[in-house]
Amino acid sequence: GWAGGAEKENHISLRCHQYSMDPAAPPFNLLVSTGRGLEERCIDTLREIMGDVDEGFCAHPARFSGLVTAAVTIPSRDAVRHIAEVVEREPWHNLIVKRVVPVDLVVPTDEARIVDGFRDLLKMRPPHPSESFRVTLRRRGARLDRDRLIRTVADLFDNRVDLERPDLEARIEVLGGETGLSILRRGEIFPEF
Image (spheres, rainbow, N blue to C red):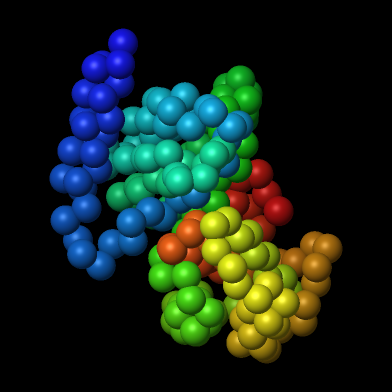
């Protein structure tokens, strides 16, 4: 019943807390899309999928319906690859786990902080000069000038733009006061962009 749910939530919080001792670790490094109202079921499914590869896996419903934020202790792209492999083998999970996006950096939702975050990411994950790119912005619960932000982030890249089939994607996932940033190559997101 109701009390069991509260105990379960406290267990999740305690479990998450014990693995977040590194103050430099982002609050989440995966953003998972599911159906509206299916967040808890998605968390259970992800816990089942990740249980054998990451004891430190932890997830919470995001403030926005249909989204789950998760923290993994293994590299986030390895986690996405593992989830994709399991869903391919066991396709019924695809009904719950719709999309999994690795998050490289979480910053406060502020245009200057987002741009600075991408400057840092470009040093850590520089694109090859021949790679094309696009900027994808998903805004939830925050007002940002969409066109200006996309243009400012795009200006950081020396690569050619390809909106249809880019080699990499500069992804901005705004969740209210927090924003997840990623530079993703094809195959590093599930399902592939």
